[in-house]
Image (tube, rainbow, N blue to C red; front, top):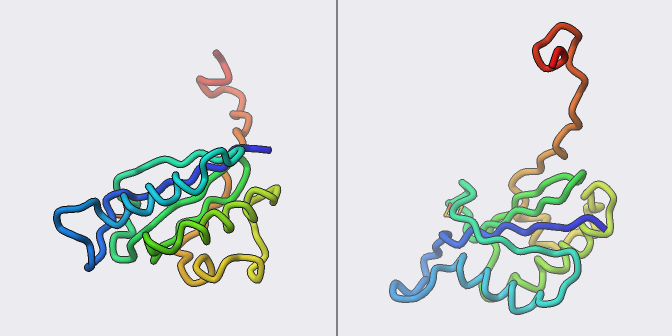
Length: 133
Ligand code: FES
């Protein structure tokens, strides 16, 4: 099964963040790592800003040959289990398209974007530099 990668924005802030503690995004990352230890075919990566700063916390889900999704409004204290359940459903699909009703409610409400899989390379027209090499 292709690996699923979960990108977690660690610079997301929420109004209730302790100014002396880790940001909400960093807390969400910690919760996800604690609950996903040993999960097969899942990699969790910390990133700094997914450009969805007004809907913290934000995450993105990607996998080869599958659609990529960006989600916001994740709660650092309560969303880890939901995100992992959504990832499990995503991983069971060949293309990343989970039926709407099978998605966790937080994914249905929090979806910000979906991005098609990266296209396969097309042959270059004859006569281009790449074709001549
Ligand atoms: S700080 Fe998290 S998306 Fe920008």
